Amino acid sequence: MTDTVIFDLDGTLLNTLEDLTDSVNYVMAQYGLPAHTIEEIRNFVGNGAAKLMERSVPQGRRNPQYDKMLEAFRAHYAAHCEDKVAPYEGIMELLETLHRQGFRMAIVSNKPDKAVKLLRNKFFAGNVEVAIGESAQIPRKPAPDMVYRALDELSSDVSHAVYVGDSEVDLQTAGNVPMKCVSVTWGFRTEEQLIAAGAAQENMLKAPRELVSYLARLGQEG
Image (cartoon, rainbow, N blue to C red; front, side):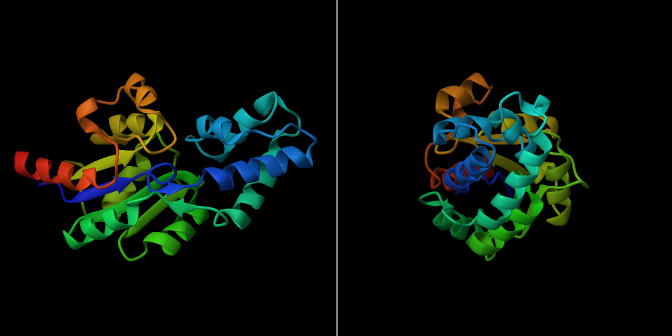
């Protein structure tokens, strides 16, 4: 029986693109570099702050200022990660429905752990029990460690869980566990990009409410 849902955060539950773009461009301006568009940042995110800045900074990690720029990004984003962020339409209703139905839920994200917990507390505290982000103590996705820790904290296991995310990193993470992965098309990647990354059409959702019926079908199959 499926009774546990592990969610990605950025692009799945929350639209964080504007705050991420603002923080990247704050750093670009500080160093006299060109700003990035929100669409560029959309394609840069998914692998954590270090990879986001590597993709954003000219020459990436080879840039002599890279470490200072990454530090500046982390500091600015920590102070501004709540400025423009909002749940996607239908997410709050989805989580409330799943909570009423008895599902246990967690968030696993490559966003810094402090920001993940802050955003969980602000938006999802009544429904999502566990939130785990990037830290020195646990490898980033697509390593499976965050998922294992979340399942342990929920007193659940892979056989009772599904993973929900919006990117190729999420597909890779679920594959590394391994566990069933549901891909959503309202986030940072298009349906075409997800299919190219290996997403199955039958495991793809176009609106949050579809997850309720998807989980119901899994229950009937199980």
